[in-house]
Amino acid sequence: MTPKQRYFKLIAETTIKSFAKRQIEAFYCEDKESAVQKALELMPQGSSIGWGGSQTLGQLGLMDRIAQGGYTLYDRLSAKTPEAVREMKRDLFTCDYFLMSTNAFTPDGHLVNMDGTGNRVAYLCYGPQNVLVFAGMNKLAPDLESAITRVRQYAAPVNNVRLDTGTPCTHNGKCSDCTHEKTVCCQLVITRFSAAPGRIKVILVGDELGF
Ligand code: SF4
Image 1 (cartoon, helix red, strand yellow):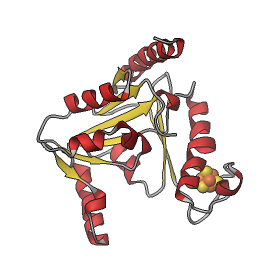
Image 2 (cartoon, rainbow, N blue to C red):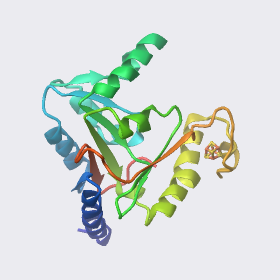
Image 3 (spheres, helix red, strand yellow):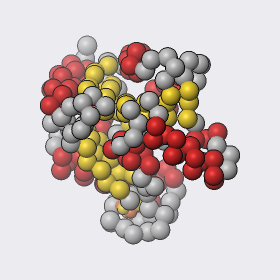
């Protein structure tokens, strides 16, 4: 194991204990494949599953695995009309498992997320029976303030560049707390406790995933 891998494991163990105090169940997986296996182990066959847009989920390859069968999938991309999209977004509130990544997490057990339309953070806060949050160790920030800075000054501008929103950060790489009509920075959500014990489950992955 390299020093970096040993460090990831150590800080993940500390973080898992902090999450437990916040009624959030957490696991550490050393690589992407073991993270996929952990997710499949957590989700019984027959479960209904929805997910939010996420680079991390794509890099894990989990969606291909669950598409092989055994689950009921709420795939927003399969909805062809605005009405069907609206109906699916509503149905997602009742799914068994909602899958997402996080924009940042801290060793003392906070999750920090920025969202545009807000449906992803809405499902994190309320609705689905379980929420599985996948996080590469690159999402670790030393404390809450740094996590918010990471989200606002790094993850959000990158996301706006990815979506080519034309917001100020897509021209200079810097967040100016804009009110541009195309901003995808509408809801900043800090998760500090899970009211339902174990409803939120975090899978930390000893790899770089997403941004
Ligand atoms: S608030 Fe505006 S400037 Fe800041 S990251 Fe979001 S879109 Fe970019």
